[in-house]
Length: 321
Image (cartoon, rainbow, N blue to C red; front, side):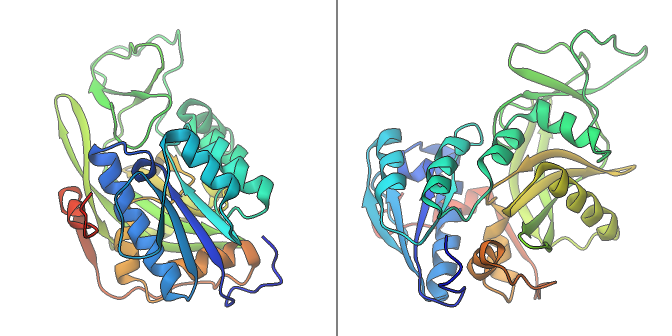
């Protein structure tokens, strides 16, 4: 993306949200549609023209383009006229789509290699540990568990959020899963933007339901007034530097003895739904400035927004989801 247009120029933006474009259905599509609506609205308020791919559903902002499946999604990224673009896709698929935008010189999101590292929870955790960023400690293959009662978190090596995450008193895990030691504390996330500097946005409380089968993400409180904000931002800044993050990102933490990183999202997260309601600045403007330069040192947050996952289904087009 050339910087001679300036962040205030009218740009043609493509916002490619995978779940709605490919008709995944269920929670993924509900959350994806809500994120797309928040971003498209922000870019349009800045005067930019927004195009997005869809399997049929529409949002109230931007112009829809009907696509068919993964091939249609990729074709849209390769051929849609644009000055800049942003991808929201499942973590394990995002790098290949980011590479398309990167090759076109229009990527407003993460570096593809950084996204690939963050998608691999095993290697991402190892990279953070090497950089001395606090993490939920991995239980490596073949490691003998300590004596006494222990609790572990078993989760997919690749996967989004709390999907298929469970707790167990045994550290054995099936192929394709990793195990970490359970951390007692409050579940928070840090939302920020990386460009020519590190711009903190909000600390958010994750509304998590936990039962015998594991964890379920239910929504967020944005922002959450944590008395340990300085510690949280220090860990987020160090993690972002260690992983080479760029653009908007969100880091999930459990804050107990330390703020410990449990997941890194090198892409827009559902927290933007609340952020766009409480932040005076436009998220779209900050995302563009992350690429072109000129990020402010801070943002202005007014009020608080809490949303439940079940409420997001209310974000509909005239035709529904």
